[in-house]
Image (cartoon, rainbow, N blue to C red; front, side, top):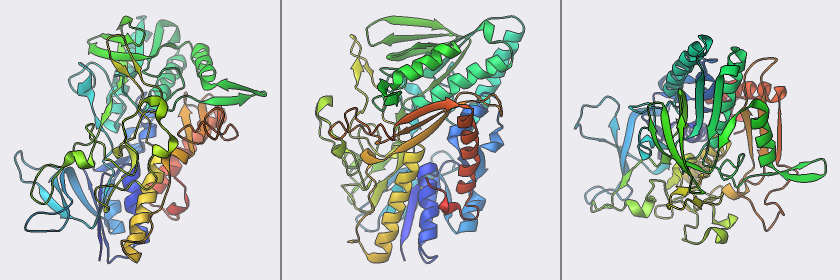
Length: 485
């Protein structure tokens, strides 16, 4: 009998858990440890955050589903890994604090034969003074509850606009090292769309603040598209949408502080900016979950398993080298820890070996560099890959080959909402291959046959279809496994 423990129940962790349960007989144990009692389809939080979708439409409780599937569920937050066990007990285990545990309570142990770290990000609002909904001066859509609060603040601003007041809406990245620019991109255009739908757009200023070197970079080094026989940068596609919708932008920016009704930031050219706002939705940078790792004698060996940022080292090349010297082969393919072969990481939990977008520094030395997104489709693919690898080793032994899904050669598809409505909605449909640009194989880094961008009503219908399709899959409805990641 084998015991597999998955830390986290987001896209990567939930995918791994449900596939392992389907792949392995009931004599093998699958256990999920997660601080979240609900599964959240995070891409639709942007709709909750402007009040066009209810919270209940983007979440469902995990415990009943896991009980039905014979997956053990441990609500709680993982604290430390003991991959070598202890001096008196050689079994590998993880400790966790159960949800609702009293302060100072002893952590619980969960033993494992294989462990998948799919903890996702720690939302590092503290990186920017005054950032975030917890004692800060901005809202967020990172969680379903955050999105509900954002919708409440947004409705208040709409009411003020209806009473004749002018309002400034600031949306974007709350720090120079943020990732998930796509979520901010979606949210700013849904804000703009709702302002038009409510008939108050003429009294509203909408500003997008981003750490991207160019609009449409998304932490992916930008895209090139083929249009009418010409190859053009996606920046032109993106900027034209901003101009068309009347959304201003400030890019290459690092937000230093958010105060009540005001934010201060600097840009890579050294200029200082102060922006007054009435409503601000700013995303935080991410850190790893912050797990400690101890060896058999109890010594802290966290730096062998995790980077200083708290993300897990996997089968990637982490050699320190100049940005110009990186290569697609630096990226992982099995997501296995080089320190312990029974540890894997998937989704945001794995440490990228380097940036894909060129990092910038302001004259003051501030790093302004979007991190590589590792969410959505790529997270699901990684969750599936590690699940199939573990199932294969459970059935055939520790020498069985691992499944491979090289991050650098993945393709990706994204549907970015630009406003809802059966007849008036729109979304940008983006595809790219490969995720990590390969200038040895392709003149512009990517295969232009499979790197595309279109925007229109059909994209909105597709976005809505995907919302229902992936919730269906996550709830493990009949034939759920036939729906691809």
